[in-house]
Amino acid sequence: MDSEDIVLELMKTHIYAYHEGHGNIVDFGGWAMPVWYEGIIAEHHAVRNGVGVFDTSHMGRAVAKGPDVEKFVNRVVTNDVSRLEPMQGLYALMLRPHAGIVDDLITYKMGGDEFFIVYNAANREKDFDWLKENSGGFDVELTDVSDGMAMIAVQGPEAVETLQMITEEDVSLVERFSIAKITVSGLRCMAARTGYTGEDGFEVFVLDSPVADPGKALKVWNALVEAGAVPCGLGARDSLRMEAGLNLYGSDIGETTNPLEARLRWAVKFKKEGGFIGMEALRKAREEGVKRSQVGIQMVGRGLPRQHYEILDGDGEKALGEVTSGGLAPTLGYGIAIGYVPVEYSKVGTPVMIRVRKRLVEGKIVKSHPFYDDSVYGWKRVRT
Amino acid sequence: MEEGENMSEEYKIPEGLYYTEDHEWARLESDGTVTVGVTDYAQKQLHEIVYVELPGVGDDAELGAVIGALESVKAVSDMNSPVGGSVTEVNEDLLDSPELINESPYREGWIAKLEPSDWEEDKVHLMDAGAYRKHVAEQAH
Image 1 (spheres, each protein chain N blue to C red):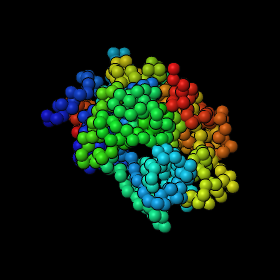
Image 2: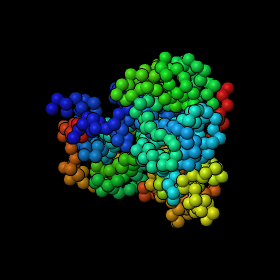
Image 3: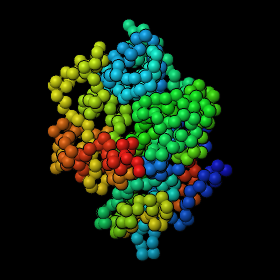
């Protein structure tokens, strides 16, 4: 079977017509997605220093609606949605009863009796099934809306100006983790002040835009590109999120990690009314004490850390754990990794060794949320 | 063959060099040493090379043995020696400028020089430019 036949069998997003003409397409979990257009490094820098645009239409999106919606969402996620005002969102996790992570997600309170939930592409079916399975006893209706709207991320320090050029409403008024109804290129959209790069920016949902009729989605995409946003593929998406210390589900977190080990305690609210699925097991884990902890590692010696490489103590004698994400940090110019080690080795400054093929290369534990100096890069930087 | 012809034009495959199935090249120099590197096809497949691991001078390599590694943002690729022998020189410019392999895979992007142990014997296992061109056309298809 040649490569064209393989592409035929893959799922495609609304923006595929553009990717096909401009990008280098790979099979990403069954989706035909661009890994890069011009080059991963240039795309990475475009987002840290200017503005980039990503097609994230492969992600999962669901609407929950009904009188019990708030109670239901609060029961299935770890964070507390009862504190949200209409059109505000938050990051949360869904847990199995044993406290393993089903997925990480962002959920928005849309007002009325509606919540909007955005989750990982690879978990589309699993998450929707999990939501459905746990909706028994709640007066709530769930709809998978993934294919009915496109999702385009505009990211970088120039994201606000760029989206503003083609939007009627003032997008600077949309606060971080809030969502707003806006009109982009004359089309009905929603824009959330969120992203997966560490930078300021938006995730734009192009409404009434089915995959089968992608005209509206392509119009918004092309307008953003014409406004100066650099098209970015999954390669830059991964290197950007890694530098920002953001977890990749399936690599850094998953069914066998709990939120405490993954240092996502901040997204768990033990005291909220009604509790959440997985709370008892997680509380027990907390009482017993967490044995291992996620850490950031900066390479000191020459060599790039990669997923599954072994982490050893500073003497290179004791195996501590393994790298869950790693590679070159283009902004920093050295190798970085996310991985797990026993808690006693997790302190910033602790020397470690990484087994890079046959060699042991020196590294050290560093602050990883983010890896870069957030007064210089990322959404917190003060713009002058 | 039409498609094959087109594919080969996309990739530079100089005459006079010897090639492996894994896309390394070897060039016999006038002093009897053999310079090795990776092909234009290999560098294009890897895309932006961001890190190179070189062999050590004095290392002995069997034909086909791993003597180094090339890394792009996304992937790691082993560099196998297209010839058996002893490493006499490595391209240290690659440590600071791994992109030389992307820019000039057959010249500035060379990886190592070896004193071959039996070039005439090893050569039999390698392809000439014509055979390698066909090999690339099949791979790319």
